[in-house]
Length: 194
Image (cartoon, rainbow, N blue to C red):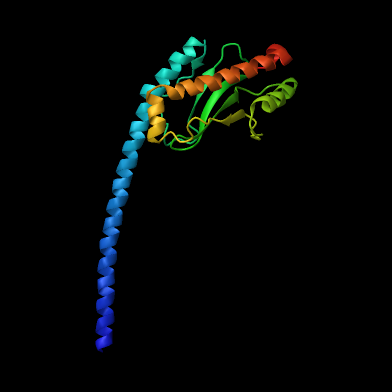
């Protein structure tokens, strides 16, 4: 009988400890959620109010333009968030920048196909892929490579690079590489190439 009381007492104590721990975990979960939402809010504002304006200035100097995104676009929590850069004399492509994962992770940059093109341009697509891509992306709309300056934009280092203009400078170098590659393809295929 005494053993039964001891077992019941142990179970009651374990239940109380479990409930206390559950409350603490719930509280921690709520705090993490609040912090996560606040960080997302701040990152979105950094993209909207620092990165995009810097990109526009840099692109305008080159005669390029950034396609406008909605002012309330959620850069952090959207799948495949990204930017489209229009090059005035390109018929079939634009420059694309995209984050392969949420929270501004794994950015890629490359040639983004605007529309379907004719069979005559398939050779151009293949040559462009060989010339530019670091791997065969097996993607019918993108020819891209990883943007290596900062793989995760939710870090303090990346945020500092965005705010002080280093990130835009790194993109400027990548964009120059894309423009040079496009010039070579245009020499091979004429105006139907890009």
